[in-house]
Image 1 (cartoon, rainbow, N blue to C red):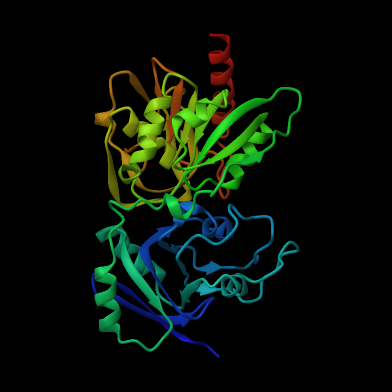
Image 2: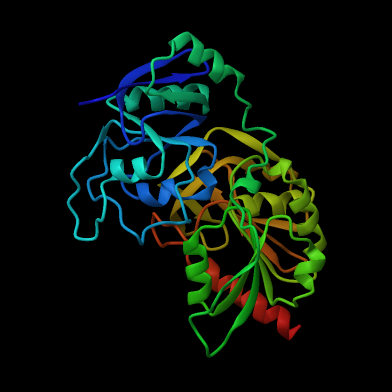
Length: 365
């Protein structure tokens, strides 16, 4: 039997559907992802902490879930919204259906709603707080509660997703090893897999680790990870990055890109509905090539605020926002999108090789 469910937005919009996954209630910023596949990686991406994800593709769950395609130890998203969820998956790797996996992890979802209409509303009015409820509470009460939820602006969510203690991720190549310190603001496992594949022996540190602690281990380079929330609220990490600049090569992705920009004196701002999906075109300004990229972010760096010692390297072709830059006078660069993808295309994996080259050049200097 189906369980009735309701999605309410802070603007008073109501969508009636049925429960998908755990029966209960959840709240967060409602956003949308345009990917056709990759729901397991999306749900376990720590950058989605505090967010309810709407999948724009109508049929979700057809290949089930498995024990390998996860980007962290648990589901990180606050909830899931789909047009139609598949209860009986068909794939030789599947160990559970998506709905059963969500039930076991206590993750609330809703299906049988018009996700096209919802996506159009979010595109028009921006991502906004909402609540999914499978209970019997009055809609008016839920809307009032949604309006009382804190906005994403000003929220530091890294504490909920960072590691509690340092841990080691060994290199896959024993011939030549680069010692990398990775600051964990919500790091994805595929980033660690690709660093290891490129010969990096990685030590992952909690978000509040100081520059002195990191430099005390004499790393060849520092990686700044992706993560959720407002970058300006992560003031301690901005100070850490600022203290690292010029002393060791730095590579940042997503939140790490924003933190590097803030440490350099630039500004960030919240996008209307963000960039989430695996089909975003980005132009490499250095080569002229267009890369199809995987993205997941609600904030961006204000290009005009970058100091003159910084060169823009990547540009979003959908909305003309900054997607990457490099420093001209110190060894540091970053991109807003996800070159490790998972899910998504592999067009941008060359950036990991560029990080290796930067560490080699710095060591020679």
